[in-house]
Length: 257
Image 1 (tube, one colour):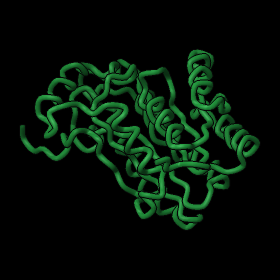
Image 2 (cartoon, helix red, strand yellow):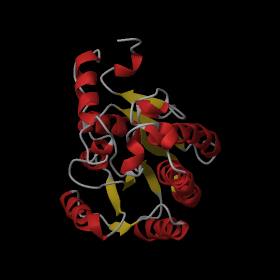
Image 3 (tube, one colour):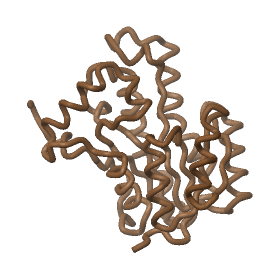
């Protein structure tokens, strides 16, 4: 059964065919949503345009979330293409590779600011600009990770950024609920083999450790996350907002293992 027929979704963060955003875009399309896909720059433009053709031929556009003018341009693009949005997917994060290994106290001031800006503040900026385009009961979702609430070796400043993102989800849920029941949630995905995840020092060890110890004795997949995204985008989650939904094969429930 298609859960999103007639819904219009904008997905930010498609980088390549292995990315979580790509899996989410595919799942939203499979359930009937029409898509706007964004790319950061020319490096990913071709891959994003190719995916858009596969998924109904929807429009694509550049969106550099580090620049307010680019986010404003995205709003204008959304209005021109579809008028209103039912779903916004924020699957964006960035930290310099050198900040994702070694001691957290060695994080540079500029690296801290960059990670927080791209990984957390961008959700705030997007919601501010796109709020007038959100349809009744629209759904906003962001991707996070367990390193936001636990100290995960080498995750470092990205864990702090994800903590800020999750806090922002709660404040945005409070802010936007009065505007036609807009919902804001986060999905905390388990470790998944993506290009960005591989930048974290010792990532392979994290994968094997989680698969060995998680209650389901496996790692979550991008398709698992995409299924949760469809739930949050649909009316099945109509009273769910301000939440962090864990999709990590149960690893987050464990104590000392």
